[in-house]
Image (cartoon, rainbow, N blue to C red; front, side):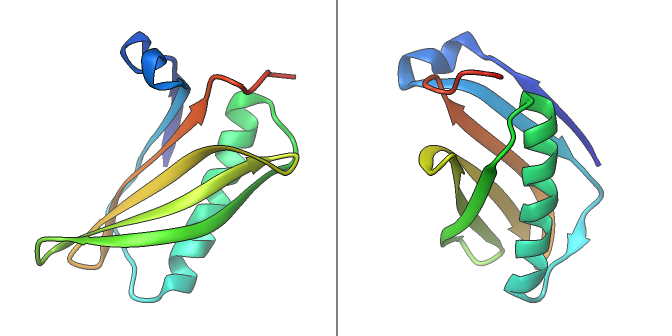
Length: 109
């Protein structure tokens, strides 16, 4: 898995300061626990990329899109404050995309 952080100016008016994008091989996801494990790995990557300790991630919801896609959302907290969202896209039970958006209120350490 390869992850990188960007600061797209086009998203600044929406309050988004950072976007973490991760590319990886499609991964079978049959149980929500497997997705929670992936979310923990993404949280570690996000912590390292932004040099922020104490990031926590919590499952928020999921949305079925058509018959083949499901979008899973996790809320990201920093020192107890909500700072962003991570989203994971699955297609036919395969995880195909991971990305996180972090608000402009976060100050890097």
